[in-house]
Length: 210
Image: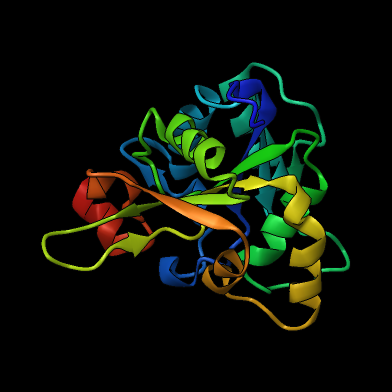
């Protein structure tokens, strides 16, 4: 039986990328409407999770301060780089594995640092689907006009027990989060608001939204 309470979910903000589309800037720390992108995501997760942590590979003290600002006082080990056995610059799956290894709750919610408009009922709806389908991973999806559904693979509710298989796949060369999700017992939930999952992943996009 799935625990529907937010206390059984640890929220993880993924901020370990190299910022190639941001001219090398640390994307989570780039300002959006007067605040770092990561701050908007943390605010949303704070209202939906029992605890918050961050996966980041640089500027760890700055992320720790952002987390303190949102939560009041976060433990000193709440911001972590990819684990040492996961090679540098291996993409978000390395951050997801690190998050699973350092999560005490049965569930974790991973969200990239460039989604500042997440739905307020995101985790509740994903958890409801997990309960109904007994899925180990549930991701949001959106549809724009007559286009096919778009799955947001790096935004999902994950049951921690998939960690050993995930590590095995990573060791054997898997790096694509979508491939990994589809190899598990997974499900998706459709959200009508496509802008809720818009990625602010380029400087041009950010300038257009200021």
